[in-house]
Amino acid sequence: MSKFEEVRKYSEEAYNFMNNFVPENYEDGRYDLNENGLFVNIQTYMTNPRENQKYEAHKRYIDVQYIINGKEGFCLEDMDKMDSSTIVTPYSEENDIMFFSNVTKGKYYELSSGEFLVMTPECAHMPGIAVGTPSKTRKMVVKIPVDNN
Image (cartoon, rainbow, N blue to C red):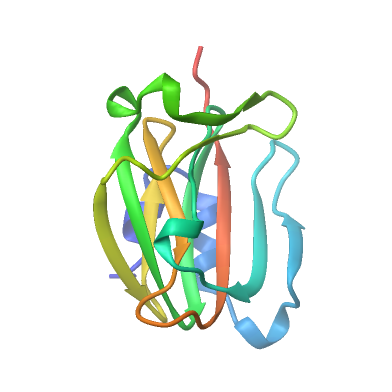
């Protein structure tokens, strides 16, 4: 059984992409996987101390964040527990994102190379947290469209 089996329940195409992904074959950037809005962002960056990060949330996409190389901390919190007074950037329909300050503790996870988290629109998440000292991380973010109607 593939370690990406959890992704399959959201999207067979995303599952197949992740299952067959060869990092050396992809540069950083956006890759559209179909005409229905499924896409992947591959990015390399430096993680940051938690106090420099913000929670983010989406309404139209599920995020599958997969660490290709490196380590990264994440904080997750249910959207219904996020206080609207902590919104620092209101929701952008165009970019499907809103940001909250990092005052909510949330549940903390550490991911290493080859590990991933699935975050639905009901989950605010704070990625990019340094594990110890800031370090270089390469990550794939699979964006799976959802119907919230």
